[in-house]
Image (cartoon, rainbow, N blue to C red; front, side, top):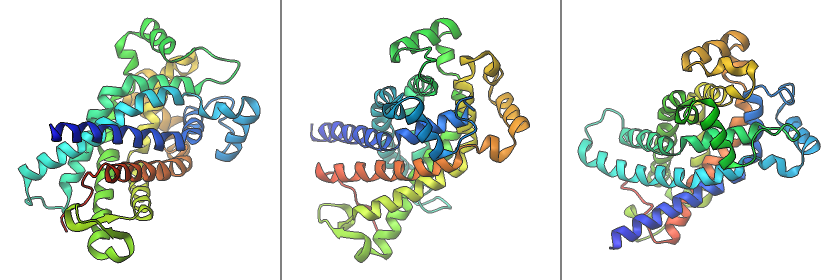
Length: 312
């Protein structure tokens, strides 16, 4: 009974952590989507000029367009990801023990598996969020989450259409989630082992008797997010182009499969202006997003008296 209550509490904590982190960077998420998919209204702009243009052309609240669908998606996504990570980490730790060539490699595998699990369950909501965020005021094609889902399902090929871009997402999720959790856990270990006086406080109920201070949590989470995004970003661009392909006849060519889409992006725009387009925004959003996500998760776990320590 106690373990069941802890599991439920952990899921709630995970979901709230995800919602906080995504809401914090929602404006950057929207401009990233507009730039990644070369919106005719925003493709000539940069990050900050694009944000100013959204407010001027649409409204301040347009910065959060699609965030409702994001909140509906992110609670089960984050709850599943963090909970699955704890389960996989515990299981892999027992099965693999210390026989791995890379220290804490089980954290990478657990993180990757957790990310794949979460994205598989919630992917259609990500497609819906992207469509809503890509719309510009005055040119609306969709009116809310349900209308978007029904329209895509009926006119673009059923459930398969809602999962368009799923393969590059899955391939990108392995390095993204894997490196996120691996880097955070590794940095947390380094802080607790080598700089406990600066980065930690005493906490007798935790494994190892320590808990990371909030600034240390933020730094570890931010660095983890930067590393993870660097490896997976081209596949994130590919996913977005595929998700938004059928919104215009001119972009339908991006819905023909992952390798075809990657090839078109590279041939038309190259690496930096194509596969890594919007990367500067991504660092601006990913670093605080992952930092807030991991920090909120650990702070709320501490508030619920759950263990956030590790063996050192």
